Image (spheres, rainbow, N blue to C red):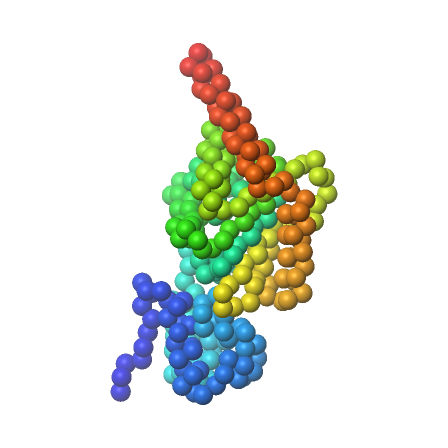
Length: 287
């Protein structure tokens, strides 16, 4: 009897896991809708599992093993397929970012994680937990920076961010860190890799005041919305939630400054931080 197949965690486990699910479903002569009905989920959800846009949950793994007579494959390899250096509530989001066709971030408080420099992230992590061990801080910085690998592809994903002006004005890490951070964002915009808009403080109330969210679309799966809160977050594929989030983002974009004017404002703020950093440095030398 052949040895039961096991996923090698060093490989692309999510892709392998999904491919195996599709292979066994097709071998059983089942459509995605058929398997979804047997697992008490939608056919669309099965499709997302197969292409890797959703992580398998333990109860679904057990049902897949039973329905597809998989000899425990999905349960046995669940840990490898779900392994991630990120918090459990955010692990799916990180993998989805790499699969997304478009990503739209609303940033009312901080620079979105995908755009953060190491120094900016380090300041954020330190502010959140001042007594965190240095090696843990650097692990978190590295994990957040690793997400930016998606920008190595010059065309995908199409990334759009709307930043509240307060994101520009809050001196996270001090003038030097902010100057570097804003120059980084401006550089990506000038290379036409991202689109950035700034929502002016003068606008007052806005459609995104209820919190941070991210919209993601995919070429072969339904769109998703991620709503973030302190120490938690949730992914939604409910069409009603997605539709409302799309409207909210459209309202934010319609109220924000144009990309060109926004870029000028970001670069102006970067120069102001550079001047402040230079003055601080000169004052320290004199002292």
